[in-house]
Length: 156
Figure 1 (tube, rainbow, N blue to C red):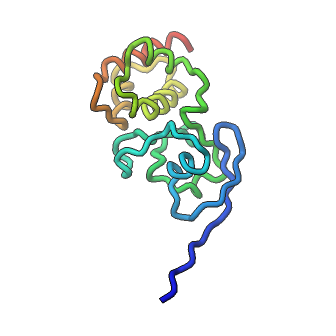
Figure 2 (cartoon, rainbow, N blue to C red):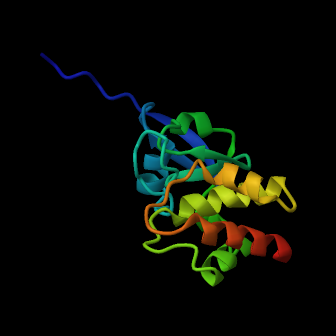
Figure 3 (tube, rainbow, N blue to C red):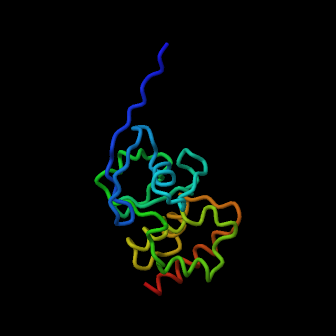
């Protein structure tokens, strides 16, 4: 029996303000394409089912789990990875507040919190906690992350 041919297609992805033409399989996730084809390894594979948030990227400014989004779905949309934040105030605040330990989940938190701060000028604790629910960290306290968000609000 002959193996089935692997169908590939070209997609044009706008990643961190750079247009990239990439040949992919229709079943490739955005996470795999970003890491393998674009060399952007900030978004991390974690649970691979959209629960942990380590793979969070922004698509048209909104947080998405790249492990469960097909790359073809991102075509004609602006994708921003942690590499594209370019020293956003939240990055400095995370460092100042020691809002990370091992760092594996940090890019996902940064992307989610960046989107939060773009939507809310000064989010209260309840809103911050609600937004942080979509990311999981086993190493550090969410209190430091919340404090980093509040400090970052003052610097924007």
